[in-house]
Length: 304
Image 1 (cartoon, rainbow, N blue to C red):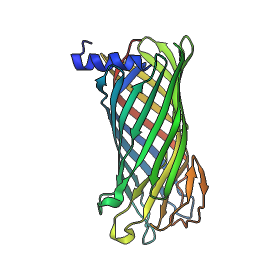
Image 2 (image 1 turned 180 degrees about the horizontal axis):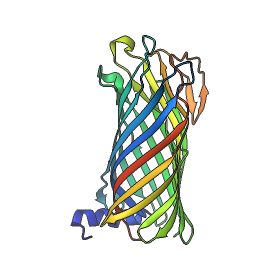
Image 3 (image 1 turned 90 degrees about the vertical axis):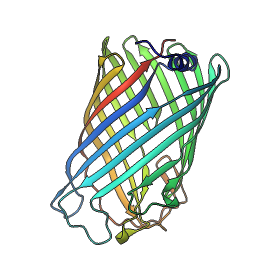
Image 4 (image 1 turned 180 degrees about the vertical axis):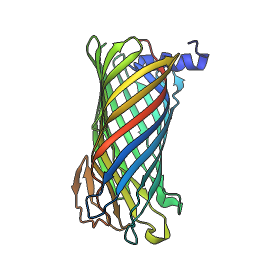
């Protein structure tokens, strides 16, 4: 596919930063099959979510990019249960996450990423400054050889429960002719098998904690902490040009939708370890279950 000059420049600079390809636009729908509550409720909860992700790197100089990544993630959990007063039901929340900042090439094999990561997390019932969360990412990149690139750093975010610090390790490693592992641990990882020229299959892991301010009059200023791990098998097929379709099936593990009062905080979370957590949870768990995910991706391959 012939690219306009601006797109060609972006790919030219990204190739110098050890990128293999870039999913520029992703549209996704996720369906969590009905699962029982960990309680006396007889009904089942059904989890449905979507994702729109757009990446826009802009060339500043030969060795510097201004990187932009905007993600929108609506999440719904519905059922046929009557919950106690003050409990969010159904759950309908929206997350807007922006990553923006500089990617600077330091040498032929190293670079540095410094990104601001503001989030707007809400149910749209009562929108104000409390819906905003501030965060940032710092990553140092090192290319060891043509088949192995790694980044080391950390993510900080001011969640509604308090500050969270997550050490990060990014890996892009082609460890066999048809096999590649790509991931940002501990958030996501994909083990890819190149089954054919236009077909990739493998195993995917994704787990991220997010918090949303609730604005309904019955529980205004409460917040919802959402967490869990999606462990799936996937198949990705190029349809035409740079357009790919990807299907995933698997399990959601340790799924949590925890509702807390605004004043319930923790001192600090490092990865999944809480320091000073004396919160009182208001709602109950949804059991783990099956999930299915379908994605449409516009991907730009980047030749080294």
